Amino acid sequence: MQADLICVGSELLTGLIENSNAGFLARRLWSTGISVRETCVVADHEEAIRGALERALEESSLVILTGGLGPTDDDLTREAVASILGLTLVFNQQWFDKMEQFFSRRGFRMPGNNRKQAMALEGSILLENRRGTAPGAIVEKEGKYIIMLPGPPHELQAMFDEQVLPFLAENNKTRLTAVKTLKCIGIGESMLEEKIKAVGKWDLPQISYVARGYEVDLQIKGSGEREAAERSIEEAEKRLRAVLGDHIYGSDDETLAGLAAAMLTAGGLTLSLAESCSGGLLSDLITDIPGSSKFYRGGLIAYNKELKTELLGVSRELLEREGETSAATALAMAEGAKKLFRTDFAVGITGVAGPDSDRAGNPAGLVYAAVDGPGGPESRQLNLGGSRRAVKERSAQIALDMLRKVLLRL
Image (cartoon, rainbow, N blue to C red; front, side):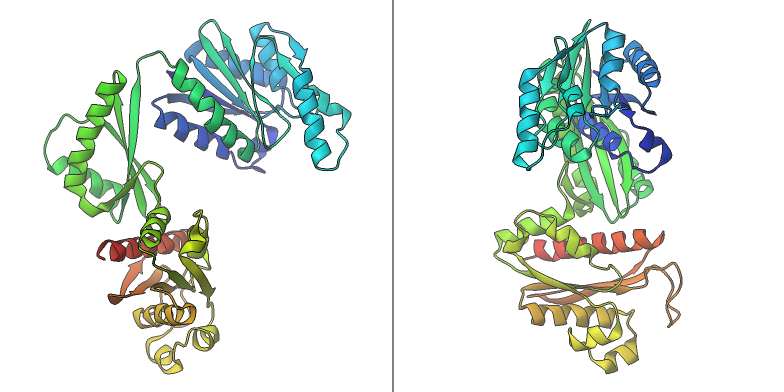
């Protein structure tokens, strides 16, 4: 099955809102073996939506539209789809009642213009929206499917995962594909390809390389009937793991933070953090994990010298001798956090996020990360490129990978 994505919203064309829905949907569809032929963004004009939908239906058997399902005059996706398919919009009392309850629970009276959202395409399957007032819808026409989803990402994502994916799994009757993603770290995509090719020719499924900061995703795509596709992916994964070793840290939806969290939780171990140049980003990644309170006791952003000394116990002599950007300081920060929060493990990060050198002349991107645990402390010097944000993100990724490798040795 091949899909087209149409993202409706003038705000997406002005750049006021980032089009995160396209990336989310493409990743989800790809993971189920449905390829995206084209993604386009159109303004809140019925003519523009109709034109995009006509073009998409000529090429693909699945078209997903996002946005334009709200209550205001510029929300015109339903009307455009009805016009192209020659269908009428009919009032749905059940959805109208749900909207009234939605407003009532929040202590508000439902405005009259929300009635528009209860107008459904005849013959369509309405999709429940637990987080808003715009129902999604699925329409089948001459063997092709048109799916309409609300624009707000938190509404769209829940609706797609809980209702659309099961529908697609049941109704995708065409030649099937399967996809598996291997998560790699500590090696660039060019070096990854070089290592794989050095083994010689082998009959592997198609592989795509997707760089994400310090990580690279290897997407393996098998084709054919489901069983055969999955067998080819399984064989490819075995051979890739043999070649790449611990550069592969996980697969599919696994994350470095999630894997570290699982290992800490399973071992009944605790963690604390001491961050400087990463500005709390590592703590944010850790606390994004559900259940992180089981192992994470706390963190400290010691952004200046005085806090490193007063709160983490880093000696003034060490800071004067080694400098704030040094392996010794990163190690002392980790040791200080471990003592302060009374944890089994601690991570320290210090360095220069950029874009300029620091007062001591250390270049932008020079970062030191350290892990202190039962097996003793260890540190690593990082020489990172990119923007200030990129340096922060890669610092956090590498620190998590260091923690993961230490935990694997237990």
